[in-house]
Image (cartoon, rainbow, N blue to C red; front, side, top):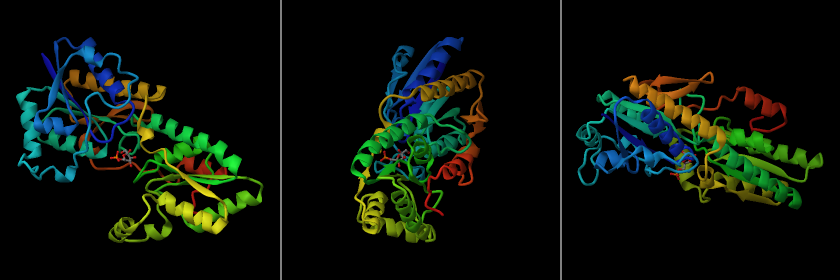
Length: 359
Ligand code: F6P
């Protein structure tokens, strides 16, 4: 008997179900032993409180195209891991207890950075854990790709496409907020794919003077509109020079719900151009996975299942040099993968005339 546990942790994305389907289908096909499957509800919460469903391979049929997660998910901050819950439950011992009570042979954890930290902790405690790189943000260290990313890029790109027609009709400036608090992979890719004129990402601090100059130049050379793809976590040069503490204080004191409103206000005041904000928000995490995500998610699921069957644990499935591989959990845990401001895509986007507001 092969007993496995599955959990999906952190913000959801479009290809979580496709990944779990890949794991279960492969185990069902390849395992010589019969399969016992436990699906933990709402991420690590299910493991902590023993909330799980006994599932069959059939439960994972027909979910390749279904967005979200059939198990439910939650964010369980790593920093609170050693703190008992209000009800006194100690999280790590509780998770180990559930794992052991069910006699699991392997726990498959589909999650991003924070979740991988917890997976590493459990692995260090002696549990057999395999992590799979989930997040629309594509910010997981150790892998070129995460599942969810390409679907989110599609949605953000479609938003930029749609805004183009109304922006050009009215001759307006549009500031579009795109997901990414700490990293700018989605705004970068969607900005290039959607033909944005300005892309602002956390990795490249901007100056409003440069942004205004770009808009003015476009207007002077006959463009009726300007579109900015702005990461949630876009940061000005001034703010980037602040200490972490000072910056946090400044963000907390902000009266607008997002930096995009402040940027839009300043653009309108300084250029005299009507400026609007558009926020696709959580639609970027919703709906069905695109074809590329379905393929990558399936690959991740298959590789994780094969690893489990080989009795190998303690790593995250990854893509490096476009090949499927594994990286030790300890190497990945807690590290973010940032956009390199000197990367080819940034260099090419700049050559194309896209401004990142830094020069
Ligand atoms: O981690 C994915 C992500 O979608 C980020 O891009 C975004 O900043 C954040 O989650 C939103 O989190 P929540 O769904 O908890 O509001």
